[in-house]
Length: 373
Image (cartoon, rainbow, N blue to C red; front, side):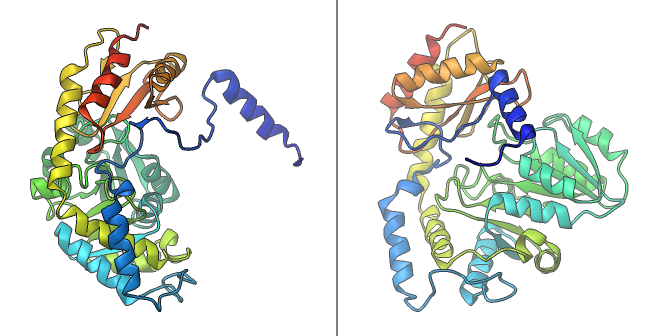
């Protein structure tokens, strides 16, 4: 038995009483409607085969990277992969991080300085919030996807200004008005940073690419753990940004580099992504099917064209009740509770995938449409 800490015991009891106690759950045999494996790459035999082929080409490579990239952990392979991914997305350079969280914390904690200003959408991901908190910059939040609110905050900004948004929001699934945001960023000489975690693969190379905004976006963050089916992330931008992060980004400098297997997986996933039109088309068909057939008048479906479809329940207990109902019926959907989302915006977060069938989506909808608050 470990040493008892009264503070820890008290906080855990508080969570239990509030009904928002978090617990880890092992994998299940339920139909997957909760993972971020949007294109099915993580379960793809083809991706597994491509990774094995890539590993076989480099039998001399160590199992582990053995150190940070500034010491023993760097390879020509990693640098070439960064250059290839950057070119694919239309940027001059990129720097790979061990996770999307590491990438955002490293970027936002090192880039803005005292006297500068970071302005984020109010629904921005926790990793960006944490990174911004570690900086010495002034921080403001604007109303979700509200360009007028952003303009108000920009009028208060000082120093270098950084605007941070997600192209597809992880908890609502909706799309940022990137063209309008890019235009106002240009007007105020602000640097725009876009997290494409939930857009890459679902919308081709991402929303930034589809809108041709690479020259308007100072930095783009792409993660590999969603539609690409592997792990890690990359910060894309100019060569000077890459060199700056190598020198000042603590989550890059002071961590052991990703092992070769992870890099080989990312390279193989990008090979598959260039030929994933069929999977992307299947996913878009299921998104359309879900939206057209949702018809529960008691609960609200947040408007979204992405793989993330969220149903507002506005109660931890009721969100858990609906999640339990659909799980009993064989579908793996998880409730998103406060404080992960703001109190009063508790929900079911449904992730659709290219490998889900129309029958599975219809079955899930039947459970949801028959639910009574």
